[in-house]
Length: 319
Length: 266
Image 1 (tube, each protein chain N blue to C red):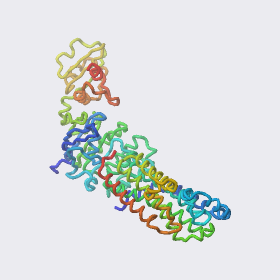
Image 2 (cartoon, one colour):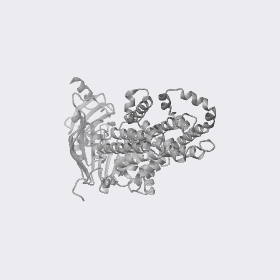
Image 3 (cartoon, each protein chain N blue to C red):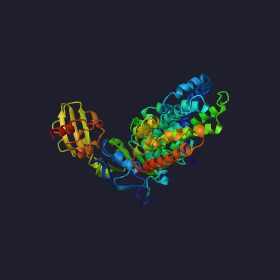
Image 4 (cartoon, rainbow over the protein chains, first blue to last red):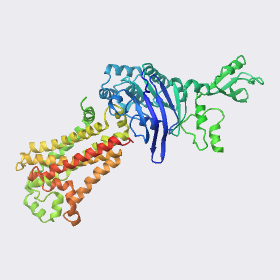
């Protein structure tokens, strides 16, 4: 396998006037690796990705793809791209667009493309303008994967897709990874990246604030659980249980924050009549907040606010 | 791999082109078929025209009177409605070529493919030029084909073709300015403002140059002046009507394309 990373972003800085959208970003993606780039909207994910694709020029630093220039046609032929807010010609049929793109790449036959459409249940005879948001996103996915690229650059590729299709897309990504492709996968959906990524980088205001393997991040990941008991909770039940970092009991419900594994907690409560367990499927979100808690950070409207005590918003107000 | 961007563009615009072709054909036939009636209204009309100030006649493209075939077509078609229709079409296509598709978001998708930016720009400008040429061809071919029934025989076919090509090149020049402004800035608004604004401004300069000394001294910069003084309908293939627009169009397209290849996409 090639020693050179498939995607190299070295000290990339991009300014738009006074705004520094990306600041001295270093990021490498190796062959057979999926790199999850996390951050809320406006963190600089899209700017980094558009620089990587050669759509915008770095103010400083450099980007390389497959050991070459991203705008080199031979390189570009081996790259698949799903853009964040990219659209396709509304008046074209799906098939017309896909065959046009395939020809531009000297690429796959219609039979191969059609197979991918079927896999995602996308009707290629429809006009793109008549498709739902989810189906339009499928067009973006199909055109990015159809030529089996060695590098995939995916900017929030599953936005607008239902959970079932999200899983199909993650399946496609895994398949490319098994074939040795390098994948840069940006998202603000944490569980999704946790499922797929080998390494994760967290962007905050254009700066990579943390980069680690998914295993390491999981180890320090916080989980919020809500345990509802059938009867009153025995006094001192949670005393001395490993990993509990916060506990709040209201009536028969315990709100618990656990760092790392929840195994000790589950062992403890077994046999005590737990009727419901509610988790807030956002274990990485807390890592985010670890890095995003900032006095003048506006809570983004489209970001899922964690259940339980609203620490984030209130902290902002106090500060 | 052939001009895939160009071919796709023409394919997408088939239907729109059909409607434009019908409109231009109708306009041409109505104008041409009206000539015998205008001529029969005859000398009275010419005397009336002669009583008008020279500048007004020039603005109307009617310095030859309007009852001769050349004077009629010049004043009723080639100096105004025909190039203006071509201009509207050319500007709208050219504004889409880079800037419009960039705003739609379709340009970025296309440029993620292995295709050079300059190629997308040049092929789409070429597409605009070919479509524009198609419209100019329809009008010119109809006038040539029906010159006997329309009683325009007096005009040479060569002059009619030269006038058609002249109108095409005039429109193509402003189409190029629109394309280049959009390619260089990524703004459809600027593209249309530059193309349509300059077309209008230079038309005014030419039209009023007979009245205003200041404008008279600068009318040489107006493409309308190149095209209309003297009119190719009378003089045929003049360098002013054919050569000068091309000399401006080509560098404008090159500069717009080069800036496009270097700038950030919006």
